[in-house]
Image 1 (cartoon, rainbow, N blue to C red):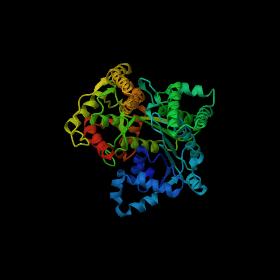
Image 2 (cartoon, rainbow, N blue to C red; image 1 turned 90 degrees about the horizontal axis):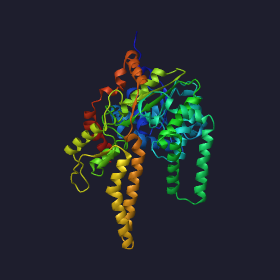
Image 3 (cartoon, rainbow, N blue to C red; image 1 turned 60 degrees about the vertical axis):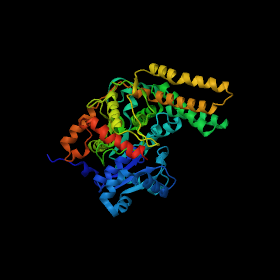
Image 4 (cartoon, one colour; image 1 turned 30 degrees about the horizontal axis):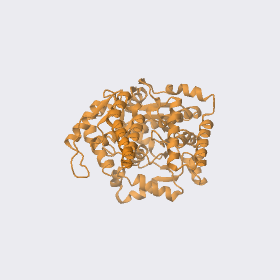
Length: 492
């Protein structure tokens, strides 16, 4: 039997991408343009007031990035004309009906031509404002689905979720919606959208009536998000609203061909378009940055816990393969894309690699002096961490408070500064606690079957590898990820 081609399927295809300025969406756009220049068109939905603003944003925040260096070198002086021919910047927003695409002619052109939709739009801060997280991660999915149903040639809708929609479950976590079954039953008793939006509107109106500052409004909406998430059984606003997005997608999908990709912690590129590219601080990167600068000496984490992480290019490969393998099937399937089942790495090993790297290659501080790193103190429970913080920082802070009072407020600025920093640290620790003490392993039988099908069915399977078993974590962390983090994020 003659093998098919992934690239052959992508030839002459029209694709809509939401979230193209995000880490994952951007790498997807670059890969498609680099490996299949005969793609017909990429529509990139971008928050902007008009087409000119959207096009400017596309060039500034996507095409102009270092990520596109290989593609630029390939096309040389023809690069700009290639982009102009293949990529259309569409002013719009997933938080609106019809994705906020106001121009009727453009909207009709999109609905008549789009064959694949990638929904990678997401508000990814763990403690995002509740109104924003709901509008993007939950109701934005409904808007994408609504547009998908109007696309006459639609062959695939791929939605990017997160493996952590499972909440704080432990053990083997399956590639299904079982973690949301109770919630699905619960929301049949009431209209979730009406209830939550009413709550948001009432709180915003109340804050406006009080002439609250923008900072107070933001803080309040963040607190409400965490509160609502926990009341429904999720640890933070991000994973809760992403879970709700999945539920609404499942309820309203009808017979559309749908794939849900659930990546774990996404890290810098493994190989493509070059090793080590990363945008912004990912989950583990804040720890690396704080540690190498000597600002992080202790960590709330079980050192034997597995951190499930996966390079961004492997996630993109899984997305493309899943699109092709499931195109035109009137069904839906979920894929976990991660490493914890097939190639696990624990925090103790990660710390060892980071310690060795920065012992040999110390961070140079603003005074030109190398920062000496030591071994981190690990705290396996929140209780022991709080006790340490109480003795190490909170008691001295209380002492400073007393001295400040005794000296008539002479140390007020110092006290306020330290108090704010301590509160910020504790808030961040509480946000990250569910992940630093996470005891789950993500089953990936669906993804493993997809890998098998890809090897047997497609002649170009090797160009879309997403098997985490090939990763040598020591080599990747020490020679790819940390150097990439320093070059593309920390040195900026």
